Image 1 (cartoon, rainbow over the protein chains, first blue to last red):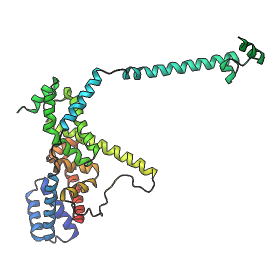
Image 2 (image 1 turned 120 degrees about the vertical axis):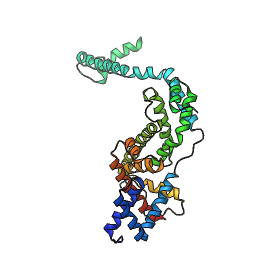
Image 3 (image 1 turned 180 degrees about the vertical axis):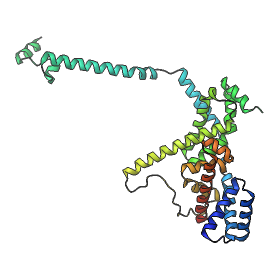
Image 4 (image 1 turned 90 degrees about the horizontal axis):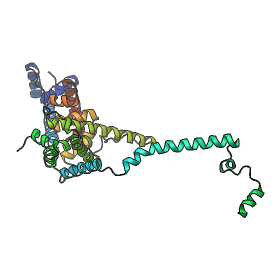
Length: 142
Length: 180
């Protein structure tokens, strides 16, 4: 068995990696043992893989100061908001209705102006379309 | 010492001290999972906290027969994957603004990280893995779940977990041997 052959090398490495997480059958185990005995490179790979796995297992975090406090505080704040919602949800709830009412008023105003004055000019909107300068003078007298 | 189930029962009645004890008991597990997935970033802290807040909100629905650590790890993985997707979307968008920048942050495998210790090297190398592969490595090799438990948490067949694990280890090994 030549473990230096690329295909064989891949097979040996695959077996080696699998052996860490799954039980190999007897034949596979014997094959792996043979590869390991005959190949210095594979033994080096095994050493590196084991070191890497040990290193990964050590990546566990340590408890963080105040972590639990922060969570409890956040939950309390959220609960408080839930029970004392204040004005914000009322405003948020009313906003679409108020907006819809405003749109309706504007549409009615535009249509009314159009049907009464016959156009949608600025003068028609502010109601001075038919005023003559004398009317304006008379108005100023008042 | 009270069991998780007893503490959960007390928490359901509004006992915040009991809930706090649960947080302290599972904090390391959850933070290790999230930081393994996201790296030591400010978002990782937010996501870790979010895991426990979601758990608190779902206390009423939690079935006692499920192991709490597995349940929390599942939430941690899902939230971390969501965060990674969000990050990728953001980076893709920013990348499209600047045509010459990469679509998302990647660690240059050929870059020599210098005299960093093994932990730093591993954290850097972990970032080069795709999220799906990283999740398997985090659960199996950092959190210490078995292949079967990892498969259950990720809702994947055991064979898929084993093959992802093998490919991920192979990639990590290749990167580490370049750096070491």
